[in-house]
Amino acid sequence: MSDTRCTDSLFINACRGIRGERVPVWFMRQAGRYLEEYRAVRKAHSMLDVIRTPELAAQVTLQPIDRFGFDAAIIFADILNPLIGMGIELDFVEGEGPVIGNPVRGLDDIRRLRVPDPTENTGYTLEAIRAVSTALAPRGVPLIGFSGAPLTLSAYLLEGGRVGNLERVKKLFLTEPAAWHELQEKLTALVSSYLIAQANAGAAALQLFDSWLGAIGPAQFDEFVAPYLKRIVEIVRASCDVPMIFFATGTAGLFGKYAELGFDVYGVDWRSSLPDAQRLIGERFPLQGNLDPLLLLGDRSNLDKNVRRILEESRVLKSHIFNLGHGILPPTPVDQVQRVLELVRGG
Ligand code: CP3
Image (cartoon, rainbow, N blue to C red; front, top):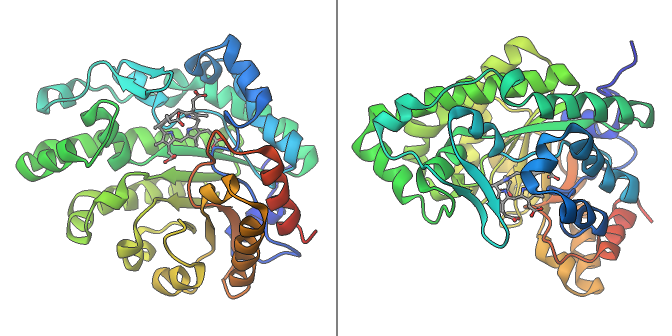
């Protein structure tokens, strides 16, 4: 059988702590509105249509690989679309972002949420993963599967779209902790089975996005968040052997707690330097990051200076996957992306 997981690629090796001849690079949200070929697809199809049509999802996943030659692809989906099968009305509204028509308001709503089987719920994404991983295998490019983490999914479920300062999340876990834990149990089951299904369909690595974790302090993290992250890692590891990446932003205050979560790789945003993050997270962990995406909107000399600085810092790390500190911004010029890749590849 051909190795559709590209286990000997620069990216997968870096995830395993093995440094290659250069640092691998991919960008969060690399398939998106900064690309004219993506905008052309979105002119004819809604966001959810693209996600739910395997041929379209596969097509846009491959766009940034074909254009730039990134060292990894990430399947086109969203952290929120798996929530539809739980009984949630989700839409992506132009200029607004995600909107949930029936947000979760209390224990009754939590009890009504279904935990669907991933093959029924997100079969279209699994089919897109099979198509993309097969297409990329001869090119040696691994495909990343992903999910939102329970806290971040809860933030959207409870707040209904605009997340803000996590008021409803904190209110729920402080005033109705049993309801919070019941919601986390359901999301943990959903996320673990979804990640396993993605790995079985051909994903070579799995990234968990906990985009709203930065609003949580260390004590609340220990009590209301960390147990579920640990459980997801345990469940996924028991049935598949692919590297697991954890990504959050604004979480330097939690770096000391990362090691116990059990992930293989930790994402770092631009608010910390990579060597500082390495010391705090632990010397044995590969790191991913951490260029400020805003630098891609600025002048070339600042971009060059900062990419070179990160590459210099990268030398003292266990291993490194070059990425942005958060998703690429829609106004990013493509020649700036090209420039980053040139520098990372040593050009
Ligand atoms: O290329 C890739 O990285 C894969 C695709 C991907 C998308 N969303 C597609 C998308 C990934 C990995 C995500 C993750 C995601 N989605 C996160 C976690 C990462 C992060 O940025 O913190 C979050 C919080 C979401 C929820 C979400 N989806 C928001 C808040 C928005 C609106 C903001 C925006 O950029 O418009 C989306 C929409 C979305 N998801 C777009 C894309 C390409 C833009 C939709 C469009 O084409 O109009």
